[in-house]
Length: 91
Image 1 (cartoon, rainbow, N blue to C red):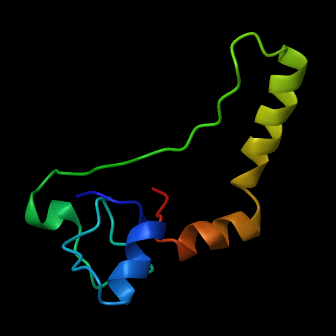
Image 2: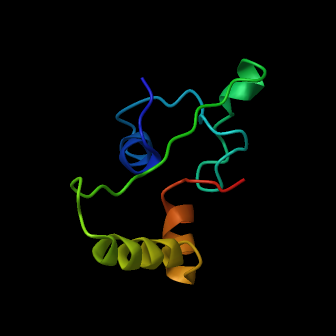
Image 3: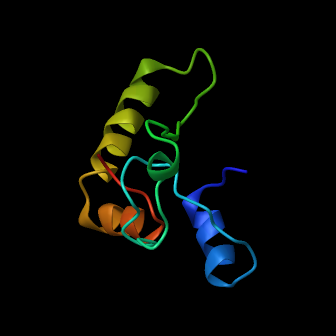
C-alpha cells in the first residue's frame, strides 16, 4: 500500500510495519535508509499533492486572499521544517 509519510513513518519507526521504499524520486531526508521505488523499479515515482477546496460560487474576494495566504506557507521556514520532518522532499 502507499501511505503518506506522516502516517507511515510513525508506524515504521515503532516497528509496526515494514517499509519497502519511498515513492519519491529522491530518498527522504527523514528516512534515508529507505530506498526509492526507482532504485528497485527504474523510472517509477509516485507523487501526491494537497488541495484546498471551496464551494462553487464562493466569491472571488474570499477565494483570492485565501489562495494568496496559502501560497505564502511554502516559503515560511517553519513550514519547510515541518515538511522535512514528515518526510516530504521538494524537487
